[in-house]
Image 1 (cartoon, one colour):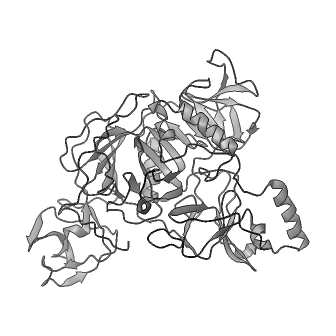
Image 2 (cartoon, helix red, strand yellow):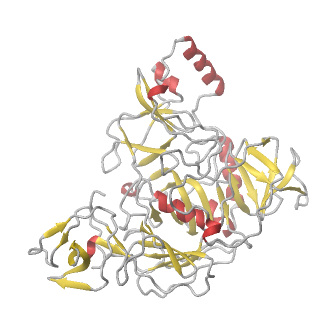
Image 3 (spheres, one colour):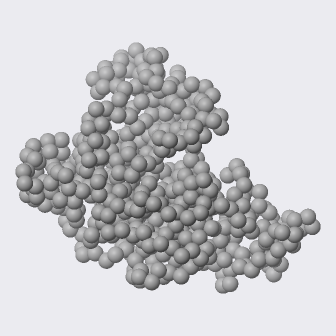
Length: 556
């Protein structure tokens, strides 16, 4: 397959240069209001520098390309390349699922405004709520991404400091950018972020060094400033570390040096001794297309060793079927108990008219609660049942999608309550807190489809595990890639094409999200824009397991 084209930047940079530090410090000073929560909360980095530290310069790469042309260096065999394609002007990858949020009940809007033109950002660009520096952050556009402008406006500040280029431009409702000399006019329309390469359900190739359970790397994995450092046998610029997921844009092959991975900064890593992640294919269930039969609960199998038996007995029951992990399984809501075990009845499991039985701990089911009274008929909102590890995307009082999640484990519970999505990011990095114990240290690059709802807590894709239906996170709500994208595309605040992050506005409040556990009396934690979240997290008891859930380890 073709290699990914790197004309768009879709992730936070994992390395830093002094401009990045200056920009991060600017962001830190600006992110004082809760309206910027989606950009500033600790587990995601808001923006980064223009170039990767340690990366080869353009002149060095040009010189090396000349050596390849002369035959002095062995270039990779393009015919054998195993990268994936990313088109410049690609839109969201789609399948048979509905893709137009407006047609599926998004808030009604006037016909879209026609842009005055497009600009491309040669550096990370901050979007402000007002046309003045120092106002709260509305969002961000990453380097190399194009974005639409709708009108040129005057500064709202006492002194106009945006005097290097075209001046201030309105780029969205409550969104303004200072167009400087590093913004260029372009005819390339912006693409929704992140762009999905053909054949993938995530924006990148993800891999990590082989390591033991403690995060100790088994065999050192070198990283080179460019492919030519690998080809020439130069000293590596660094070695990859454990407890870290790395994002790459290409997997290529050299006839002489074998397979190697290439990141967005053109740094390369030999693929030997790297474990490539295989993101989950779980999506969930569109109830309009796949409803449960009358009187049954829609559910899934959540253990790889689950068995359906001909009677609700462990010892005497005969195995009649071994359902696939994450396969649909509709069950009767009544439970039968035998010797301390609870069983669901599975209609027609043995043959038509002959039911089977499955242990409750091997199944997760969707048990709907009362819809929120204040939600409009055409409004999307999210309901999460933490006890069953199921998310439901509602449109009014109708459920559109149900899907499995992974919420916080017993040590790191997910907060319960009613919240709003405060900010969204197309892609970002996540890392453990500074005071994390050695066995809890983690760092994951390029996490797609992130939606913040409270402090550091967010809904986001998890490409590094497939334990959906089990508590497995450090407090966030993990979703499989396809479900994560589906929900992200339908919630507010919207992420304008070309933007990497966006916060809610007074005219476009974030989507409501309810996180519950059985019959909780839930606090309403929705705050006015600009008001910070409570200091007391008030998360209640840890989500310890009961006989409703069994979260024993398995290999899935």
